[in-house]
Figure 1 (cartoon, rainbow, N blue to C red):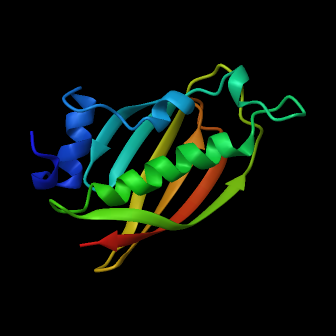
Figure 2 (figure 1 turned 90 degrees about the horizontal axis):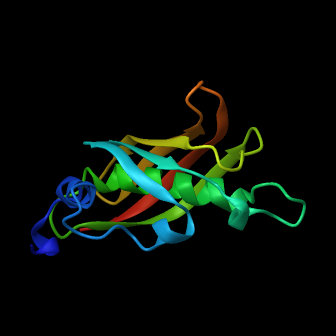
Amino acid sequence: MELSKMSGLELIRAMVRGEIPPATMAKTIPMTIARVDHGDVEFRVTANNGHLNPMGGVHGGFAATALDSVTGCAVHTTLGPGESYGTVDLNVKMLKPVPVDIELSAKGRVINVGKRIGVSEGVLSDDAGRIYAHATATCMIFR
């Protein structure tokens, strides 16, 4: 399997099927890809005791990393073979404390992808629909 010949959508779907390994960041922030479509992804994420800040709450970097991952992957699903991206701006609004040991949904969707810039948004929520964090991302596209 030659990764440089795969579109972003094909590459992420190959990860879901286990044909290529997930990003190593998934070991630091436990996340699995639950769904992937063109411009739209969902990961399942769970904070644990290894993600706590000095005050005992889940560190804000947990939500930021999960949302950076889904907003970037949403853009990636729109890219062709050999194209890549890098996040140049990530704006995260923390709305509620992230719970420990409860699986959450991190969803990302594309707002717009142009020749050089992709804009997407993400939401971190639980299965009851409570939103813990919201993000917007701007990605530079390398063609």
